[in-house]
Each structure stands twice: as C-alpha cells, then as structure tokens.
Length: 295
Image (cartoon, rainbow, N blue to C red; front, side):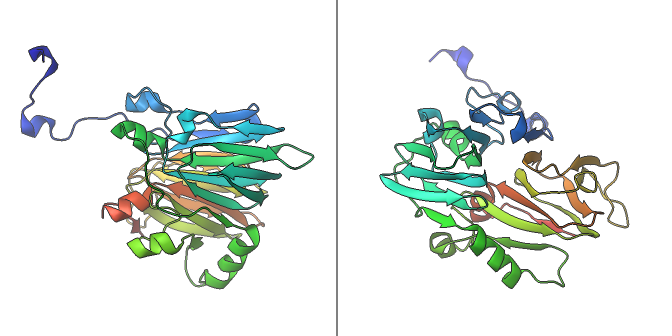
C-alpha cells in the first residue's frame, strides 16, 4: 500500500467533520416521466449511487404497462410502495400481489421485481428502498428479515379511526408487523418507519425533531395554500419555529425534512389533510439513536 493513501488527523479539530447539509427538497409526481424517477441527492453525500438520504432512496413510479426493476434498485433489504392511483400487480420472489389506490405494500429483498398495470389509466406509485445503506457498506442482502405484506387502504383508515387519540396533538398511526414487534421497534420493516398522519382542519401540530431524515408524501391536500410544514433550526420561548422555511403540502408531492431540524404541521383550511413520512427510523431505533423530541 502506498503511504500517500493513508492519513491521520488531530482529534479535537476533526472529531466532528463538517458534512454537507441535507437540503430541504420537493418533488411532485406530476412532473415525472414514465418509469422510475429517483429523487437523487447523492452529490450531497459524495457517493456514486442514487440516494435521497444517506440510507434511503425515494422515487416516483409512473407506468403504462409493465415495468421491471433493474439491479440498481434490487440491492436493498426493504422495498416500500404506496399506491397514489391505479391498480397493479407486483411480482416479487415468485409471488403475486395486487395493490390499489391508497394501499401500501412492503417486501424484503428480491432477485426481481415486476409491476404490471391492471388498470385503464396510468399507475402512480411512491417507492422507497434502503439501497443507499447497502451500497454504502458495499454489501448485498442475503437474508429476508420480514414477510411481504399489504396494508390496505381500508385497514389503514380503520386503524387510524380506532387508534388515533382525539385528545392528542398528533393524530397518526405507526404501521408495524410481527417481525418488527419481536425487535421491539414496531416499525414497518427493520429499517423503514412509516407514519400515517392526519392533520384536521384548523389544527397545528407542535414542533418536533429527530435524527432521521423524513421523506414525506402528501397523500391528501385539497387546499395546498392553507396546509403546510414549517422547518427551522431553533424555537423561541413559546415553542414557535424561528425564521422557518415553509413547505406547502401539494397532493402527489414529496418533500425531504433534514435531520435535527424542528418542524411543525399546520392546516388553516376547512378540509382534512394526510401525510405519509417514511424514515430510516427502524434502523435508528434499533441503534438507540433516533432521538425524537416532541414539544
């Protein structure tokens, strides 16, 4: 090994290296072409593979007929699909699954993934996997750590009605299964965490923050001018975010909430709104470093 390859750094000056900030980013499926459109922020991480956050890749998928996923998307332990509209069949690990508008489908690593459009119109999907985590480690998956599952729209909305406490400021449910319950993390896969969050009219959900990156999908937002998230570094003595950036909820759109920033959700309109944040919080909970702070 050439000595020019190795280096050393003084501890106190270099123990907290300055990394590039993760930018607040927005993308809407209406602006995407057919096929898979990754939300790629890899330049911020100095890597040569597609990545939305350090551990996750979010994409929009728009299909007319059939779509086969290439190897760049298959190197993942967790695949997550939310159906924005349409009906399709997914072939994964020689099993067929049919999902429709409002459904969520998860599956572990697969040697092939094929989507078949079974509707008369385009199928629109929000798709997240943990391929950046595997690519960062130079690894490939070898064990399926959870079972494929469908969370139907009816199941989600029924559980939201049953479980969301009307007296709580946050009205949402975390989706889970028996495999993640064994780990004690109660997330949708061992890596991915999924919150189905309701934002009623004339409501503000107080600031909170966490160490994971949130990849938020706006499921329902009929009044985008009145429904929004505020994001900022600090809060004042009354728990209001100081000098926030405002992100309006646009139906069919996603936005990236960076780690460690305060963010609050607001609905000044007359209709209920729903957002679906996906995070790598399953991994961070298992590592005991998620650090959620609620005000």
